[in-house]
Image 1 (cartoon, one colour):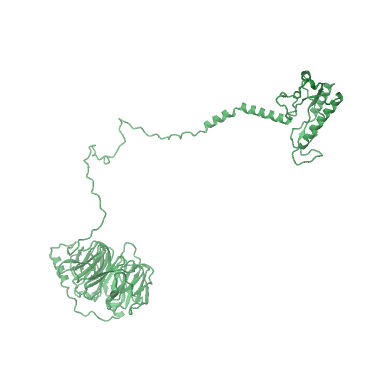
Image 2 (cartoon, rainbow, N blue to C red):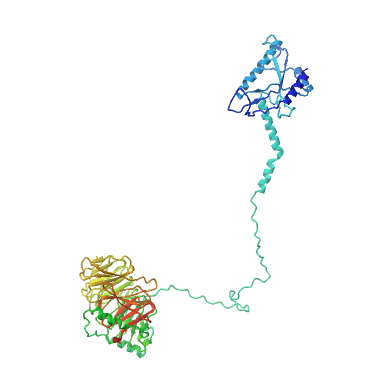
Length: 622
């Protein structure tokens, strides 16, 4: 009967679908509602209880073992039934908290059945054998359960979990993943970089190499080696050495010193020793007559001379009334003398080299016109004496570089010399030697030009970087001198500053801000007012000599300055700012940066940056 009941119950269990453990049922009609996953327990086990009397006297307290007969009978019964599983016909749904309650209910039912067969609880024992097997899948009926000794004391869930762990471990071991991982690690190791496709050709020991130039092999076309050429001497830095101290002979660079023409040239200049007897102190001409005389000044091919090889830095016209003599100072230390009355004109040009660096200032001596004084960047000031044909050394200072000078005395006995480092020197030509009388420090960082007042010769003006100072020569101090007046209207570098030639009542300045400024210096006090500002392009660039506006010595209310305008020209402005005249012509094709006007005659000479001079001469002066 037990077999038929088990078969019926088995059939019933096949008709009902089994549910997995720990499955969350969302639409199940249950009385208990919880937000946690619902644990579904399907009881598919059969409990068989075997009771047998025993006495405590036959066993020790720590030995409670089931009789062998009962165990053998139980195992035989299981084999006979072929391990048939009788599934319960009911299904209970309990939450995790009610698991312990369900276990207690089962134990109480077993205890009630044992009381019917046994009278005394203290003398009887219960041996409970439970054969339980949980279903794995819905269509799985049989399973092999390990022995009781392996899972003794564990719940069915723990037994199932351990079994899954062991099966998973065996499955992964059968995959041999460690061996596969080792092979992959070997495959992903860095491979050596691929060799370049282009292979270098191997050198042939006995073969002929590539063709080479015979010139590089230093051999002739037949293959014979040429003799070794000596190494060229090492080039020395291009540094122009200073000329030796002392007087230098007048040696012409472009003419023969022994010919009669050079000797006649020196005699001509020596005959100019006495100043002109004509009275040069004439009043100012009217602007109308002045313009008329300027209109008659022209330039031609006969009055254009190539004098020096480098740019012209300074220029002076001899005050002679009978001959037109022009002196220029050039970049490479040359001093050129040109006689416009000499024919042919190539025979009237003589070039000397009394200096080793640019000649920035050049004057004829007011006391003896046969003397020409030249100042250079090389720190020397020399006087050319045409009667003796020598260049005497007046002042020498190898530690400093000179920029400009002027005569403090009318007899040209004392000089004021400006230095590029902002210092000034007082030189007395009557004192033996070539040193200074006093070296004065100033507050200026650089001095470009120095000019003495024509009437009050104790005053002189200096042009610096961006300021102009007027000093009193009587108050100069070697430790440092303060100027009487400072002109601070300039915003950029200043090129020059000059007093008007006759009265000194005006000062003209040339600035890099493209302005010519005229100041009223009629009263030298603490302030000199600005009269006129003339807009004029003074940006000459790197390769042209800077413009320097000069006063016309015959007309001290007019200034002469070069121009960057095209066609090329030389312009004259009135002190009011009006343009008076512009000199030009077909022969003037370059910028004349340095200009000089004859003190009594209408003769204008302009020098450019290639060593040429353009002389504008009035027809009446020829």
